[in-house]
Length: 179
Image (cartoon, rainbow, N blue to C red):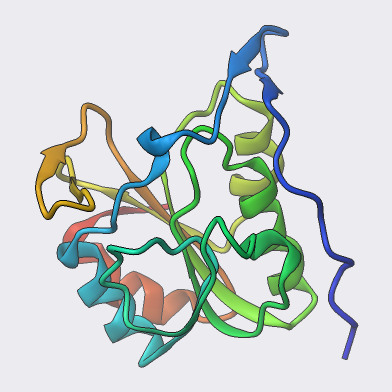
């Protein structure tokens, strides 16, 4: 078995999009949104169990065996097993890259919840080569620490890296188009 890629550093503050402009990114509280239960249910159905949530927070309801928060920096930790990743939307690049590289190395199977942005380099480098994508059919209502939620002003995509395309298609096709 191939060893996992080396650990990566935390995300940078600027991200170059396909048009050569810098997209401003940050690590403020605006990135601290919890995954809705309507997403967690099919992810658990797909995996059976979630071994790791490397992008967790204090109000997460993701039933992962292990979690990492911004405090212990999930990008610098070991990833194994079934990984569910809802990265900071302001800086998804390194998280999605890690999902793909570690899945290709046979260390993990990963599902990442992302805001689709095909105008960025990270989308073309790390999302297009994914095993499958589920373009979620409805706008999601993300959870805040106080229990409130807000419906997103954008669409969402679940990106899968692993060897179980048929199962992903079967479980996620009721929620959106599979690509």
